[in-house]
Image (cartoon, rainbow, N blue to C red; front, side, top):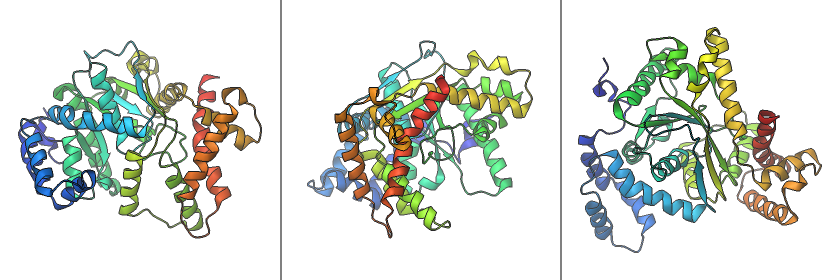
Length: 387
């Protein structure tokens, strides 16, 4: 029988570890510089004192979420969006704990906003969150994400190490659902889809089954998996993704630096998103038994296909999705979904995003096509899923 200590290397903080972690943040030099950016007019001893008092009485991750993260996310949504809401499938009840698997729009906010929205809808708890260790590049980031309920997904491993790590993480995910009293969130694939064409990786589903002593069907049913669709009107990182496309086109060996990852995180958090919508589908337990007669390979393919259909059919589409597809196809087939004012607004937005790109031999036609594709693909997938 697994115990919490079996997962010390990847789990978030347990209640007795929260206060020591908070004290370590107050001592971290880089974290102090981050705080200065939020309130540069305050003397350091006042910033430090305010946080020290604010940390009093925080003994659990839920305490930290409610006192700090919920107000922070509320402020971010007010500053960086034109509204955000969630639609929860009626069959989802908070008597159960769920594993939410979603398309991936933002490195940090996808799960943080979900936590905020779940608390608003009456869920008694938040999600534990899967996050790649490639993003935990400073001690204060690692501490902060563990305070936010994140567990670590190890990257850049050998095949043998990857298998061992995947089994370990799967065991932890099953442990959480039955012992920690939390929901879980995990992206449908490793990393974000740079072109916003969201597809569930079968390897993610296979990983979830590795740590369960039963059939692959029983393993996935055990997790109460709920497909979740996240829709952004505007992706603040679209120009960074487009720039990466050109850099890789011009230099196939190009790789992002740590600073690039930080820039993506900062832009994703604080950049303008327009309207944001979260929509859950039915829990896959309502249909997964229909696949009982399939072999392992066909089983995972069909689960991934059905999850994609659920996620794609619940996109909340915006005028710019229709404009982008018409521009790429050089027609106006979907012009009844947008106005001339919508076109003008989208054109001004794209122009502003292109202006942020500063690279050698900047290919504006290619960059524009890449950004249009990012906005057209959700509509393409929606049309395919609902036809």
